[in-house]
Amino acid sequence: MSLLKNKIFILVVVVLLVLAGVVGYKFFSIYAFNSLSKELEPGNKELFDGFKDEVAGSNRINLNILKASQSLSDPTSFSKDNVDKYLDQAKTEYNNSADTYKKGLDKLDSSVSKLDNLSKIPLWLGSDQKKFVSDVTDSLDAYKAARKADYDFMVKTKPVFDNSLQVIGDTAVLYGHTLTLASAKTEEEAMAALTQNFSQLAPLEKYSKDSYKFEGQDTLAAEYPDSYKAFAAFKTVFGQYYLAIKGLSEGDMSQAAKLTEIGASFVDSISALQNPFMELSAKAKPNTTKIKDAYASYTKALDFYSEKKLYSKENKLVQNNQNKAVVFAYAIQLYEIDKNKPPASESFSDLLSTLRGSNYLSSDLKYNENDFSYTSDGAMYFEIGYKDEVSNKMEIFVIGVKEAVTTSLGASTQVVKIKDVEINLNFANTLVNYISSLTY
Image 1 (cartoon, rainbow, N blue to C red):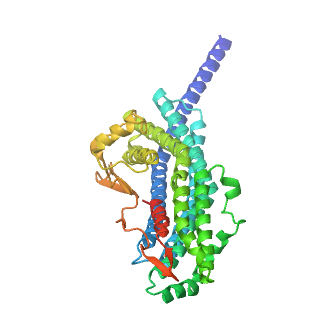
Image 2 (image 1 turned 180 degrees about the vertical axis):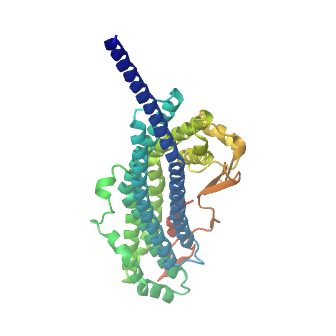
């Protein structure tokens, strides 16, 4: 009997140890899930703060380019120094945005890795908890990958952006020179403007050389054909203008006729091309779509988390309206890429239906329409409002430039006459109008 008792005792101990292990493992699983939950709210804030920083940087870039364009398009307030200042600021903001993007990616990678590690711990959880863990980690992994691809695109296409700013700046060089000609009231003043101000055109001399190439031309022209065809058109017009003015300043009046031809050839070459900024947006659309879809999946996972009350009381996650506003913003940006402008102001309900009907926004992401608002000028900007679930107040962010737009474009309609030869400066309107179209 003692042997039997010993066997029973050993069996009971084994069972108790197994039960203790199971209970301990279950408690460990619950602890691991709660640890993951604790990472959600600060991680959620990091994602939204990253989005706001990205928007703020983009808005500053666009505002500086717009100000450069406005300075260029109004002859009464034109200042080459101002154009250069705004373009330099735009380039600095672009470089800063790229640096911030890289730092944000590193931080995102660290946060996602932490969640991934927690999710890989074998969890003894219910089916809803398992679904949430799987959905939130999968969506963040997809978001990280899409963001990485978008950053790589930004770095790769920087030459296209830089070339666009260069073209705007050199248009200001040409434009400033035409103003000195157009302001001449006598033939003597016109001739003096030609000869004395020719040195202003020094930045355009490079375009007169057949060997000149824009940055990235050998590696990017095939992938971004419209951009580099546009740059080539500017190379032609800048180079021809430089040589024509050089000839005129040296007394070769036959060059005057070429100035009229310059505008006509530029119109023919540029009118059918997509502008570089639009081409970049179109090429970035697949990445933007993936970012939007991953953010939407993440947002739906947080909805599921709240609906199923998977949180402990102290870890309740409530800030999801901001994420829905972000997804909505990406959907509008995709609409804008296709339509070349954001939707005009309309009720949030109608716009929601429009975006869903056009497959910019999935129907399974739920919106309480009373918690959101939308306004836009239908051209330059849009703004989205969302109700903060903690403060219960409406918060708003703006994407684009909410600024007055200058509509008076072009340098001058004056025709300068020297030695009975007409020098037509109207072609400068074509250049300035095209530059303005890049930002409007």
